Amino acid sequence: MKHIYSILIVTLILVSCSGDKKNSVESVIDKGNLETIRQKRGELVIEQQALNDQIKLLDEKIKTLDTTKHVPLITTFNAKTEVFNHVLELQGNVTTKNLLTITPEYNGILTNVYVKEGQKVSKGQLLAKIDDGGLSQQIAQLKIQADLAKTTFERQKRLWDQKIGSEIQYLQAKSSYESQQEAVNQINQQISKTLVRAPFTGTIDDVITEQGSVVGAGQTQLMRIVNLDNMYIETEVPERYVANVVEGKKVTVELPVLGKTIETKIRQAGDVINPANRTFKVEIEIPNDDKSIKPNLTARLKINDYTNENGLLIPQSVISENAEGSQYVYVVTDKDANGIGVAKRVIIETGKTQGDNIEVLSGIENGTEIIKEGARSVRDGQSVEVIKYKEEGNEN
Image (cartoon, rainbow, N blue to C red; front, side):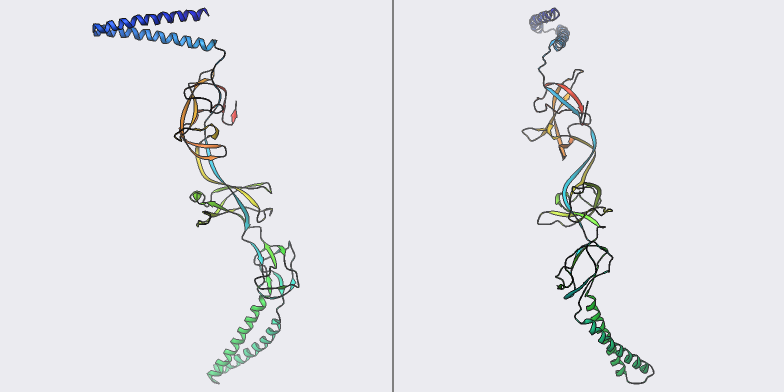
């Protein structure tokens, strides 16, 4: 305490002397002697430096003796650059182009069903048969007539080649043979429609119509066939992402029901904007080696639409906004060994958000110490005490 009193007494003496010097300064100015004025100014500069040194000693002693510091307690983190991959989160449905409900091409009775549910079939394999309504008998008769027309034509042709007979007889025989062949082909085409074949290799998922039922061409659903090899996810993306969500972009697919996460990419991005909802379609390829992924499963998608190799991310909770709409954060400057520093308000420009974090485009640099806890209670230029210093995400 005696030391403090001594410093105070010295300060008071200096202050009182400065009052006398003020009068002396006025008298020196009144004399108008340039050399004397310069000399007096030099003396005052020396005295001012002495006062500053004394004030600094007093401040340091106050800091030592003052056990109840009236400064806000804060925590901070260091902004650091990192690779910032922004993702667009959407929902999609698993589907496949090889999922088809088969309908007949012919009206009649479903006489035979040759497959059952869960059976694997090959492309072109016979699945079912519809009664042909007597076409088989008609084709037999037509074939007899066609064979006769063929024999007649061949004989007439040999005669014509030998210049025997008239040309009209040759042409009539040829026309009769060709018409009979065409009639046989037409009946064969009708009969082929009574045979239901697999349009592609896959699995019979469901037999819908039982054997013996009357079926209608293009109306009655016979069975459903599916192939799980070529699966993909379809989703609709808002038009504002049309420049960034393109073919080849990386996608993280989450299938909550299966507990699976798959890294894949966009295989096709639509070129047409739907005027009804201002979106465009995107197809995302998805491997399905174990056949566990089924059509119509719901999928959560994270599409990488933006990447910054040197992104600065900070929590949105530390950002405030002033009356002009500008965003700012408080940083710590002039921090001493005891953790005492000065809060400084810094205007920043922000970019894309990701979860609770936001990208900072300008205003702060890599390594800037930013106030986190207590950011809402400090003022620009206020002294603060850092009670816990940590790197963002790593506490010390």
